[in-house]
Image 1 (cartoon, rainbow, N blue to C red):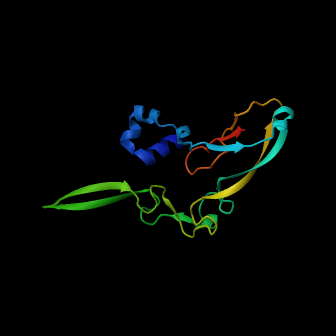
Image 2 (image 1 turned 90 degrees about the vertical axis):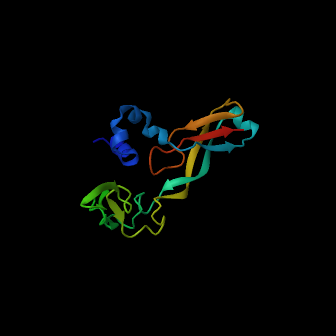
Image 3 (image 1 turned 60 degrees about the horizontal axis):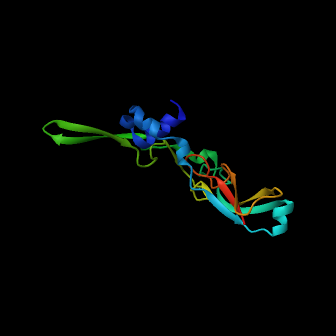
Length: 172
């Protein structure tokens, strides 16, 4: 099973994944977060002559200690004991007179992943993403117009699911 179908199955369930219309409606690229917009205030001289500027951006980044897994070390990610790594739990409910129903649901402990974090990362406390600083070099070309928008794809906030957002600079 490909990653896209697995993701949809975990989030929507089997009946919706089997429906091709719904499957085509959800695209992992649509999970991209809102654009991260920055304004750069520059003197008129830089508009005419151009300039390379180092720019410090505060954004969400994957935790540098756990590399986005949320555990203190890789051995702290263990198989969920409630579902035995299946991601689903089955419950039998007695209705009376020898009748019963069997319900299968997403495991509440691991949320369908089959793995849980034993000891959480000390830096991100298991959140996988933290606020961080990143330096970009903004290349201002000579003759750039005022209010010019420069878009850097996938260079904005990182996300747990889907692609990172875009970073857009507005030169003023």
